[in-house]
Length: 152
Image 1 (cartoon, rainbow, N blue to C red):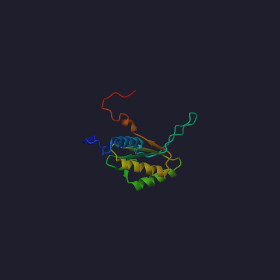
Image 2: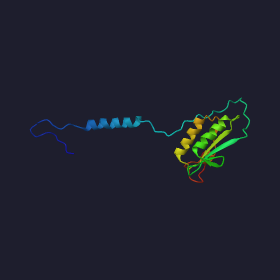
Image 3: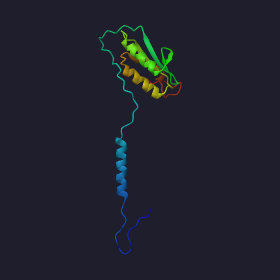
Image 4: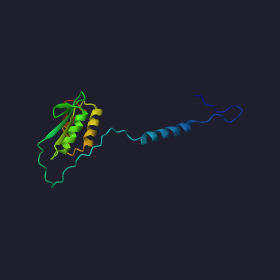
């Protein structure tokens, strides 16, 4: 890009100086990048909080239902493969029981995100109150090399 300093006859420069315009555009671009919210993929689930310290612990439920999501995107209910409509029916049946059985949810590490999110939405819509994630302890060292020391 050539710059002109005017002609030899002393005429003023006829080209516009675009450097300040480029600087303003760069500042605006940086401001827009900073203000863009970070996209999060989350499913909001109301999990129960810790019990009060003086509360009496409820007795252990004799019936526990386990929902497992497999790596090949199948739903397994207590060891039996089912589809989403049967899962919804089983969830409605379990919410009608007194006392309500505990629902344990265990997705495989290779299970699809869409299936996991849809299953969690079905569970939330069913009104299950006794719900827990199980089997997550093997994800405690996510992203670490095998044999790496655990953080203290």
